Length: 120
Image (cartoon, rainbow, N blue to C red):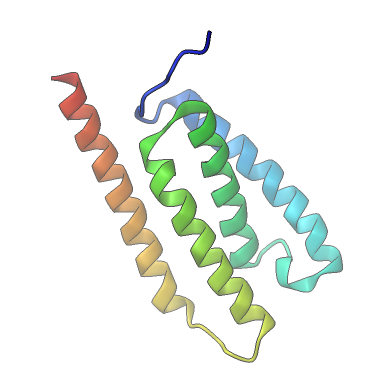
């Protein structure tokens, strides 16, 4: 019988799991970037794809609420940067990064509020 896990908050173990999965994903994507230049190791697209993969894995394993929000956010931003790098259309990162930062802050605030309400 499987046990249903509800959404929970970030723990040190969940952060370590996210970091480990993101690091492995970044390594694999960087290796692909050797052969396909848009995914080179230091590109924003590669880093954001790795973070999105880490969020997806962390949400599946630990059900961290903020990963359900930031994972798709990182994925969309990675696609924007990837398409910008592959086409003649250039997207200025100064327009994208504030939305990413705002989304991450909102996700953590929602998780914090959810945890505070659940505790009471």
